[in-house]
Length: 176
Image (tube, rainbow, N blue to C red; front, side):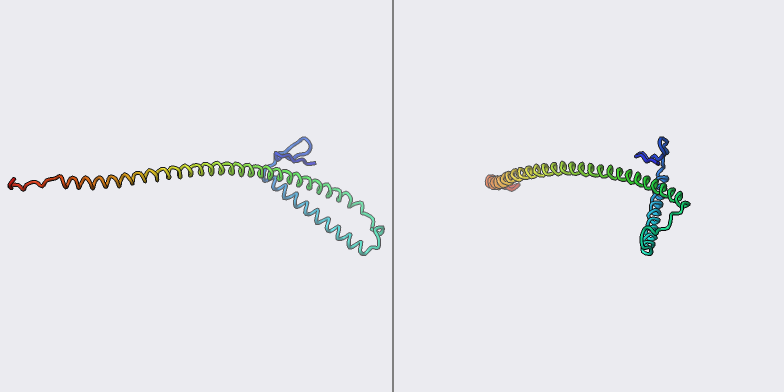
């Protein structure tokens, strides 16, 4: 029987042949076509049996089997069994590949969720820190505004004082 391994080798018994992707596709297509042909043959045989059974009164009245057909049918059955085995091996390999990819996708998703959670946590902490600093700046600005208003009032008082203390100078060439 032809054996398929996970590494893409096909062979009989101990001998193994490395199969290229193109050969693998061809084998798959041929296996599926042969499998479909065997199904169609079975359907034809079942239809013939149904039509014969509706005509014949019992199963004992079936005509004898032609011995010349038996070897050909045995070959076809062996070929169908081999094709079915190849197809099942291919399906097994494909399912293993899909499982491996699914596992990788789940791992990638978990890693992405962990990273997003860490980033979100950091962003929330940074936002609270920023809000705290903004509150502190607002308090400091309130103090600065109070100081600014005090400075303005001091400036006004200084100007008034300056205006009252400055004696007008005599005009040039004028009397003192």
